[in-house]
Amino acid sequence: MLLQTRGIVLRAVKYGETSVIADILTEQKGLHSFIASGVRSAKSAIPYSLFQPMMVVECIVYFKEDPEALHRIKELRAGLMLQAIPFELKKGAVALFMAEICRKTITDVNHDPDLFDFIFNNIAWLDHTRHPLPNVHLHFLLHLSGLLGFQPVLEIEPDEPLHFDLKEGTFLPGMPNHAASIPPELTKYMLHLLHTPLEHCHTIQIPQKERKILLNKIIQFYQFHISGFNSINTPEILALVLES
Image (cartoon, rainbow, N blue to C red; front, side):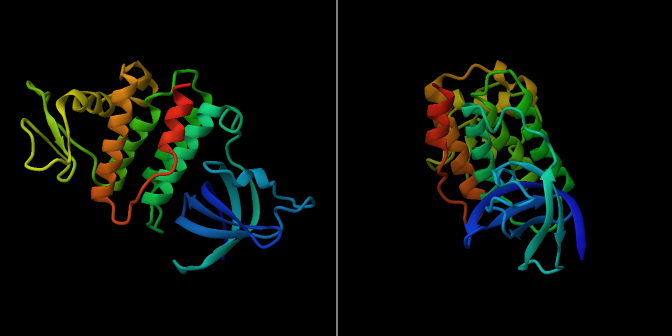
């Protein structure tokens, strides 16, 4: 069947002399792999630049109702004209981090409009914002976890410092009986990020050292709750870029 849909490119690898295989999260069909023939040639009607991570595209594809199929791209054009992410180092680094996280966590081939909208809105905001970016990746991780089904929840305002149990995904007044936890001095930042809209997350003042530790703890939280989630390649590069 011929399918027209918006999509978000999560990863692309070169195939053969001029082709590309791309993992694209589509608005209508979820995450699938697509092949685009000849796009790395000078005469291609499809710009190769559209296959950069977190590019939003409008595509027409030959789609097969088979979760294991490699679908073929017929037409592809920009679905959101990015003005900053492809050209600004810090925004590009955050987008690469988001793309890697999405690729390692999203496996469902069924469409999820809330998940698609969440990622699309984060890309659009990142591209146009003029606010500082040091907390954006943390905010993205914590709120993406909700759409993946394991977001931390604290329904009442705490009246005492809390630990966060990474294994159980719960807030506790005392330490759990294992080392996989976030201490109260970091949990307070985590709670602020959970309860603050994206456009205001830059107002949360987190010291550089604590931000690095909290990022590693949240990644560990993902590892406990997503099967096969392994190490991330981009955090160190991201930290260097954001703190420069």
